[in-house]
Image (tube, rainbow, N blue to C red; front, side, top):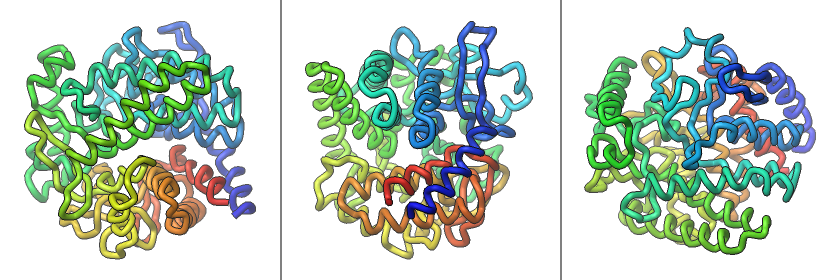
Length: 421
């Protein structure tokens, strides 16, 4: 594996050199240095992509990893909010904007969130780079973001934060939201999803996208299992970072919040019949019972009891569900909506394997001592990247790559290779 890691590292260096964006933005007078997700299709700075890029860069160039996170946090708002896209060079790529479903806080910063993987990225960069000095520099903004999530996105105070648009999960067209969005069964054309997104977005726009009024509107409010598994894991990581930086009181508070998130995921989202976890929709918290990989994401929680982790591991091993030749399909192969390859026109997340979700499950499996299965997923993920290049997603039955090329998030395979050595 060590030789494989070395060869992969060389390819990642070349990829990140091609995708690097540096400069000074006239609209804000700030410098930036980040890796864009894909030059031809995603030239801006996306939140969870950037966190994943920083994790990968921490193995290759820790100062650049630090710069990646600094660029992301330069537009943290006074209330703690961090948007999911910063449009650093908007004037160059105006023609691409109609392709995205974006709500804007300003013309250059989005008004949406993405899954909160920030604390984990900061930890990995600090470990391999600036250590405590870097932590003390960025932790005020990082803590502010998680405080914002706790304060603004958890109005019922159960420890579960809500997404208010489908794209806030990062899983744009996942079938688990179809019925809730009013998409007719069997519809796989992009127009149906754009119309559904627009119905939600227009309702939010009409009330100024005020979070409190949006919750009251109850048009699209989802306590997403993946988002909250990441949130719970990262709150616990943040607690450790705060302790390292000398903030014992803050560390204790974040541990309490992490405990509450785990408790609510188990008590409210877990289906006792199957052992899977399902999202909760709307004021009435109706379970969305489509079996997607997000049902397995509580593996990310180190404090998830072993007896509750076991059914999730079994599902990953099952060759009729998630145990595909080129893991891990993002929708169970038992689901009628499972589509292993491209669907319609640019529909995403309806079955193919993605490297970042493999990475999440890899981390979760290792957290529960399942190193053998984690190693298999790492090996097959690295194999997809080696054979097909850095693609946006891959066919779980054939390993063929699809979507954007030079897709930097798929370089997370390097972190998996390094950890599996």
